[in-house]
Length: 392
Image (cartoon, rainbow, N blue to C red):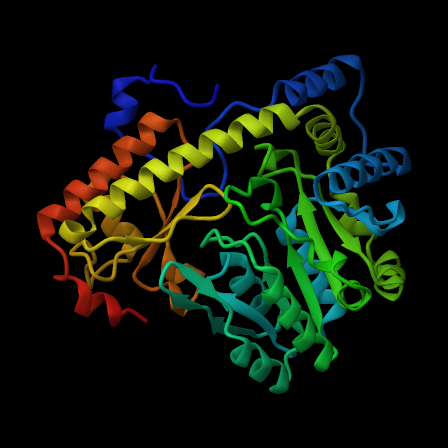
């Protein structure tokens, strides 16, 4: 079981959390056993065609069983991780100087990687609408009209935990097709859907969507194995696949054989473990959100319950926690010793927010929420609102 009450007191009293999106849980037993067997049975070499075939089979089986989508095996290509794959796609599919579109708040590398290789990132802030976030379709259309080539579609969404509705995906598909654009579909959090809305594979919606999409997936987030370095890019346009095969050798070569073994074990024998994890995350997040909602009048902290992932996107703009001299993340840490990701790193729309990773043993999440609420109550709601809304 990932959550236990048997926690060391000094851990609860010390720092809580981590800024990276990874779990503080044990790995699936099937993964541990598979890796141990591999290390005990002989040398571990470089990735070869046999391992790639095994990876393609395992990933294809998982996608078919989970989402009713089975892309052809040869379209599933290895990369070490999401960011490596993203950088490679930008390098080989988007000309230098041509912008990419990132709905924000967005996963931090989606904003930092493009300009590092001379592909400007156009931020299109999402619209907060009561208890939901929605895409700014007019903003996306304007960005394409202004010369952008590729849209980053993170679904389920990091950091806000949104699961895109089918009608939203339909409108995105229409806009991208109108401008003959591309979609980089990050679906790495798909196994971590918490609510009733199911994950819909964007490329599986239609032939038109498949033709303009490159999908990124991995077992790393759901099964807590990011360090094994095995992700996948799925090329549903044959022309894209042919181009990738011409340029991909060194991008694929860095994928770990141990990552293939871990992925195969997770997908083939880890579903029961994942089901338990998702149920525990669901309850932990509900409890945390309920505590924040109940105290909002005293703290000024806002939160929308995530539909997926293990991330809480906390709105501190109307709390007294923010300070003009430090980032929101630093202000939270100084007041609570909770480690969070600064929302401003997720784009201008994230200023005054922080991302809290709740994939922790439940007592730690409870302690974190108690600390956060206590610190915000001490300052009172509204005192930091003016400074927060002025953060760039």
